[in-house]
Image 1 (tube, rainbow, N blue to C red):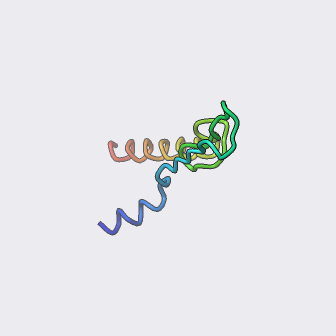
Image 2: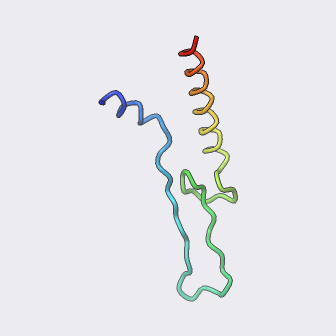
Length: 71
């Protein structure tokens, strides 16, 4: 069980959703600030480029590891 805890530190952190709602005195039609669904930093994309690269890298590493196990 302890090994799983150590390995989990290398994985992405849980999603941090930040909803920027209506602020006091805000104009009607004011939109929410867009943030990355993974890191919560401001981004015009749903998942920022940095997090997307991390997710792709983790998926590739998992695929390579799975293929080694099958061999």
